[in-house]
Image (cartoon, rainbow, N blue to C red):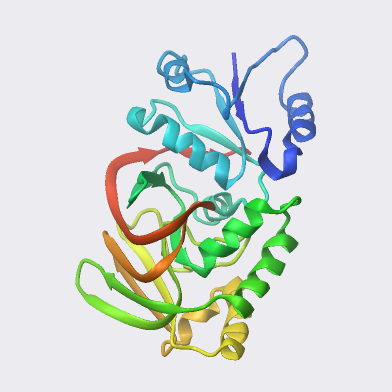
Length: 283
């Protein structure tokens, strides 16, 4: 019997309709899958612990759904079977990288704040991307256009700050910093290719820091992010790789993990875990 795990809140509640279409196309008459709401099922780890290895498990939703799932079942990872993704979210950035660079397993990272640990598989960030993510999550409709509009508003209004970053090999302060991103996947913000060199086969995170730049030039660079061209602006876009990261902010800001936001952060640390996931895109 197949298991379907879905998020009814994903993409403004549209998965209800999408799921019915998926069920009709995927399963034969008389084949009844078990359906679980990932936001309400308190014993998802227990269900997965006893689930037959040969019975397929589907996860329907976007980056937030994947993040919720990983945090809920973290102690059980790696699972003895793959999770088949049906990307139904508003961003679907994890799925974009998985389609571009398919892998059998993906590393799991931990972001630690004063609110405790948060686990992620695609990426985290602090600064303008956290603020934009917070605004998108509060929007009545979440579409690619919503991300674009909120990004433009953020670029025009966000106040950059001094950030001190510590990686495996250096400690450095950056003035007038707009964002610090650490990515295992290549995309964020609904299709922005923020880390074009990132790969899940590499144990390190791609670190991107945008700093010391005027708003006009930042807007120009922003357009190049969709094709990964922003890395050539080395004066304003710092890029390195590291297995760990510590970020100290001169004033509190919003952090995000896979699009889920955490406000009022001043110190954020990121480390690798020994856990892995095994997500696969449905064919």
